[in-house]
Length: 142
View 1 (cartoon, rainbow, N blue to C red):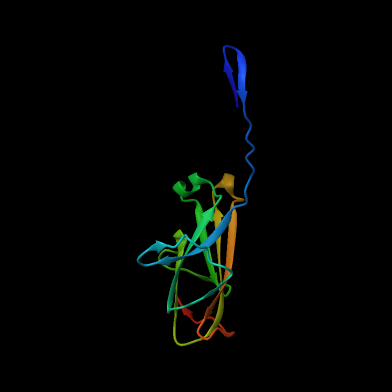
View 2 (view 1 turned 135 degrees about the vertical axis):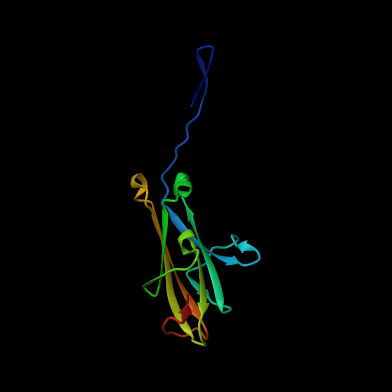
């Protein structure tokens, strides 16, 4: 940017904007307080109760893509596609069925399906421990 006054340059400034890789972070969604943005979930999460609602929040995606609804979420639990009533908007509720114990792998992928922004994609993976936190298969009912 250059500022001219009466034909003379009086000021100039430059700003370099670097491209940023899209990112996806997971947060707990509390039924009373909403999304708890104070801390993103780490790579390993313990299921304290029988239910856990997660919200996948995208960063560095095109704003107009939100308005045009060209962002598509895909959730996988232990490698198998899962869904729920709000999974398409980035929210998934996990409920432990039975008294099982062990761990499950959860991943979510966000893809911008806009033809001109097709390379905007992000994935987040976490491990969820439940019960006595020993190894085992998935015991979640979705």
